[in-house]
Amino acid sequence: METKDLNEKNIEKIAALFPNVITEMKDENGKLKKGINFELLKQELSEDVIDGEECYDFTWVGKKAAIVESNTPIRKTLRPCLEESKDWENTENLYIEGDNLEVLKLLQESYLNSIKMIYIDPPYNTGNDFIYKDDFKINKDDYEEQIGLYDEEDKNMMFKNTDSNGRFHSDWCSMMYPRLKLAQNLLSEDGVIFISIDDNEVENLKKICNEIFGESNFRNVISVRRYDKNINRQFMEQGLSTMNIGLEYILMYSKGSGTKFCPVFKEASEERTTKGYWKGFWNDADRPTMRYEILGVTPESGQWKWKYEVAKEALDNYIEYEKHYINDFTLEDYWEKTGKVKKFIRRNMNGKGKNSGVEHWVAPADGILRNSNWSDILASRPAGFDIPFESPKNYELIILLNKLAGTEVNDTILDFFSGSSTTAHAVMELNAEDGGDRKFIMVQLPEKIDEKSEAYKAGYKNICEIGKERIRRAGEKIKLEIEKGNIKLKEEEGPKKVPDIGFRVFKVDSTNMKDVYYSANDYKQEMIEGLASNIKEDRSDLDLLYGVMLDWNLQLSLKHEIRKIEDTTIHLVDNTSLIACFENKVSESVIREIANLKPLRVVFRDSCFDGSPKKINVEEIFKLLSPNTSVRVI
Image 1 (cartoon, rainbow, N blue to C red):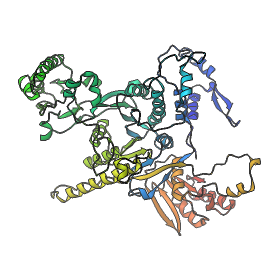
Image 2 (image 1 turned 180 degrees about the vertical axis):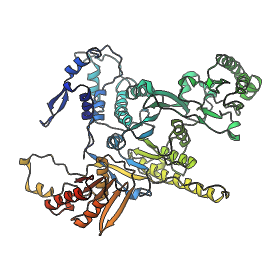
Image 3 (image 1 turned 60 degrees about the vertical axis):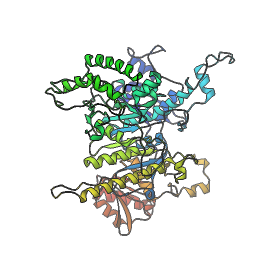
Image 4 (image 1 turned 45 degrees about the vertical axis):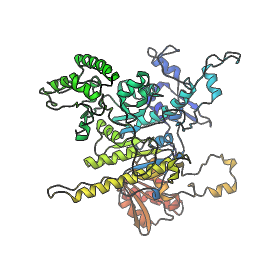
């Protein structure tokens, strides 16, 4: 009932390559365990080992502890919460409450290499949004000692320490590193991760991701607008140094080099064409040479490419525009009088390529000039449904990221900083749009809400309550819209299906099993009596079932059916992938009927059997009727 020790798995990988470097050592309890003789390993890699300090490395005080933390097992479980769930028996979506580091460890085996897309919006480390308090968060005294803040006599400070210098960033890096390291294990081979961030930590985040995902798997950075403001006007008024206050960034990394991204276009509309938006967003996005502010088109292939002439013309035009702007010359007048870029792009769009005859640039109006493919998308947008939440992410943006990542109808999307559950909202909307069955996994720490906030006044006590309510309301709105649309269908049109709008709620808790760490001479009579059952008294059959599913590396979204056999309750997971029975003194006839179903796995509680002979008899029954079944007793 403990998560896998990732250190052991890493040692096994090294042993497969260099079995001679594996040795034995004693753990803290004096028991033997496998270890690595690093001196021998260095000899095996003598020409490639870097010894000393002169190497390129990104580090901070606390990094080693962060790496250890990502590999350290925990004794936790996920307890199902039916009363807060929606459509438990049919849904494949998950909402998990708890520290995401613990959740990622619990999901490691069940969801290994199976998540197509991860989107996260972590704390930006602005000074008031960092609430994750991990064990490896270093205190001020230890930090100062490790960085050599004082001289040898501990009297004179060697340099000035500010929020931007060291510990402020070290704590954030130590929080992010193990979470991203565990997340990388969950991505499928063609999986993609998108991470929203602002200027405070974008440089550190990119370095961490380069180390974890590989620098070659960095695909791009998307800039999106934080506010619905004219970025160009802001530039003119405040200058280049303050341009970044209106932007956020989305870092893109793939699991492997073979990941392909999909072209993403947004259909033209009357509303969009009057506001100067690009009609297309991103064509052939997995080619890093194709991302530029001013774009031309190769007539033969229809692919975007950089044109020196366009850059020079754009620069000349902007200088001209700047002169007019100072004299209150409007943007619309400027565009009509000096629309060279517009004419150039039109001229090049009339080739033989797949985009021939399509105008991707329209003249701006109302002083708004959209100058990149994604900059007309807002990073944040109110959730609606009368749910108060500060700066929730825009679900339309996450829909576009899903399309860019190429998520297909049965893929799983994970968000382990889920906030108000924007990602869940986006997945349901996209499924409604294309008829898909994408599944979401939301993970959120039940962070308490400020009692002075509008959310608290509306009755929400923590962020999880807001996230779950948003999923409920967004799902019902989607369902209502589809049902209304189906009523108006023509005879030849097929009805649209309502997507999965339910979710199963799980909460992180201590293991279902009692802790038994005493040596024999430490036991007392009353302790032994309490260990008649090794399962904690407050745990239900469902707690045990889903704890076993995690232990057996089964996904928590699998179909779950409850059935009766002779008044005995049994649980069937994914038909007969797993059958569980936790009732007291189960009859032999019930056991035989379970065996006749030929499950792949079966689990019983120790109290199912009235003594050891009955337990032995069960093993014989399964050997006879279902010899391929894996039998477990807890």
